Image (cartoon, rainbow, N blue to C red; front, top):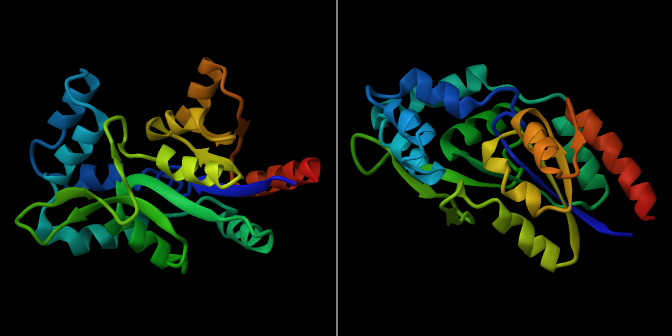
Length: 220
């Protein structure tokens, strides 16, 4: 029987909407959207975009941004059930996000999930009038996505795990070629279809639990 490990994207995967986009759209200081223009034109990469957006977040609005995350952030149905399934079957589970820790903490806390391990970017609001982008504890940087999700998959594989990745967006494209099993929705689903990457589509985490149960039956 293969040992499974789960690595899960946050924005748009665990959450029903991309909270990071909502926050920068609502609170970004004038000029923040120039970074999007430059990114789409190929002038800067994803890591540089994350750094750009962070410096357009006012330190004085940290608490208001967290409040918005708690009010608007919602999790995809079945996530708590997936956590319970992983715990009952001794499957390591962690979140790997290119988003910012301040709102991830707020949303996980809202749903009493603060004990779920995760790595992400962080925004330091203590160094000046605007935030400073940096990798959070355990996270490493890469030029493609800002936070390297592949670096969360490879160590598990070296330890003998079959790694399952669950994601939805652009920051998941790279890791979709590294993980052993892919669950994909939205942009990641389209990317997998167009690039011949084997994946399982999902609408909620109940779909994932059912598929994992079948996968374990096959491996037994």
